[in-house]
Amino acid sequence: MTSISASTPPRARHALVFGASGAIGAALLARLRDAGWTVDALSRAPRADDPQLRWHTGAFAAMPDTLPTRVDAIFSCGPLDQFSLWYAGAAIECPRVVAFGSTSDATKQAASDPGERELAMRLRTSGERVFAAAQARGAAATLLRPTLVYGSGRDRNLSLIVALARRSGVFVLPADARGRRQPVHVDDLAAAAQAAVDAPAAHGQAFALPGGETLDYRTMVARTLACLQPAPRLLVLPGPLFDAALWAAHRAGRLQGLPPGAVTRMREDLVFDAAPAQMAFGYAPRAFRPGPAMFGVD
Image 1 (cartoon, rainbow, N blue to C red):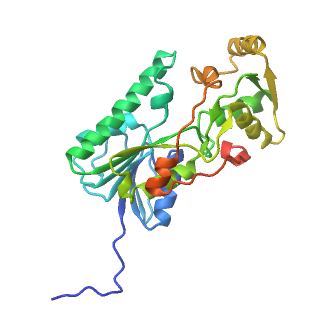
Image 2: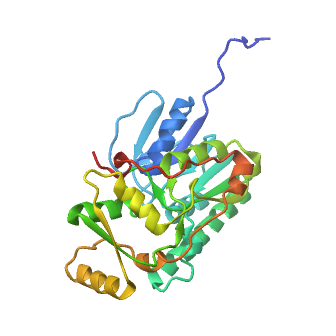
Image 3: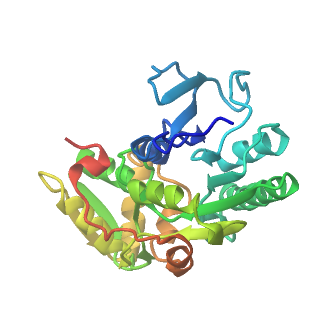
């Protein structure tokens, strides 16, 4: 009988990561590699491999045939709808799936904009599809739903505000922009995915992932602008004056990329409970302490 030496190192765990070149995915990729995982990852553009990382060129609509047939965990850090459709039809063997969605599945459910309502429905349907597919094949899935994401300079929330403010030197808010927010850093989300994969209490569950501090919208924006040099001016206007300024800015094309309904939501509380994630896998996000590099500013 051949015995295994006590000095034989354990087999490195193997992950398949979708969205690895995105904000959350890049942070997760660094954490997995630091923890000794080997990783296969998908990218639309060719990228260089290394001993721990193998890149595959492709997309969900044109999936390469080079993906592994078995891994220890799948992480989805990109579009949940596209991942859910792929996973539901994939033949890959994997006992553990961790996928990112968004709290927009709740906050935009009753939005005035039809596109935002459709997004909320698509997120909910996609999450249900992932859970159903995992259950059908005897795997355990976890859905992570972040709030307002920042930290990479690639988000469409605070980074957009920074870009608009730096361009004009001022950012305008209505006086009643007091809806509460919980901005969450991308690395805290990566840490959550890494912790959840090994937490039995996370099996078959969805968790909201808010940041570690709750603050009103105006305070959040003021703190963001204050970290820039020179700091753009925050101008607070009464409702009618703000509406007039907003109309003028739209007419001048200075608000391109501002999401539909963004102004309305400035007045709404978008707050979620972190306690379930804390109890299930020790989720402990940081307070909101922004710096220029978090918004792609040198």
